[in-house]
Length: 299
Image 1: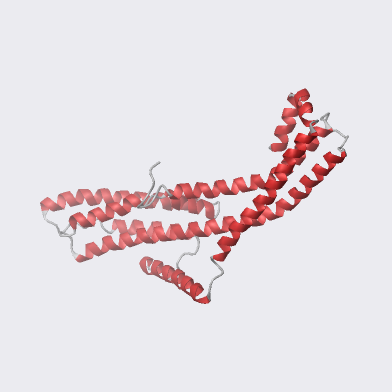
Image 2: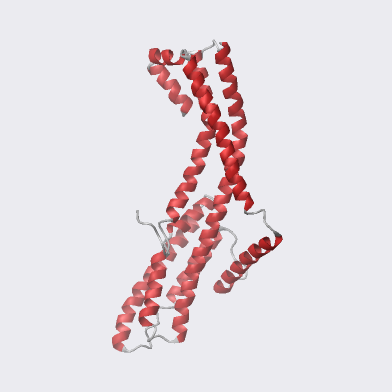
């Protein structure tokens, strides 16, 4: 895109671009700025990656506690779902949670049968609205997960799209309002459903953390791979301009100097383009996560 844009502008405004490019001192200054920026960028990203890695470089006691917490969480999911093989990836996790939440919600449909008529009618209306809301949310998530074929990021995005905060608030309001009229079994069913929402929230946040770590690691590796060629090409271009060793062969009638500068600028911008693409993905996930849940920031 950068190469095509520079070539296009050079083809449209030939005279103006020629005047700009012949100012070799200005071109060298820009390339020097690119070179300094690339080196600084690599240093910053490597430092950030070191901070992330420091979370994994801990004592054996801390590692043991972390592993035990993960195993306990998976065991809790297996206990609530009645399935010993707890999910390990975002896709299967969302499928299991959507199915179980929908089943738990439908189990509350007959909760008003043992209540008095005046209370029962009001409760029936409230519980119907509540069950329909929970079941509809779970069913939408279940259908969406079945149609996803884009990897963990798309599955994670579906989890972030599911706003469980209002469902938790509705569950709390139902139990607070009708606690004195409900028997222990029905209260326990509401409690179990609330636990499912908490499990969903915890799993979603954990997978989001894993995604952040994966993205930062891939960013560091990709940036290191592409930064070295960018640095070499930028240094070579600066020295070539200073020595006057510019190419004199054009392609398709385009100026050799235009092609040289366009290619050099494109290569120099590669690390910044890589950083931008990764940061946009991470920022999008972070922004979406802040708009759902029991606590949120107003836009």
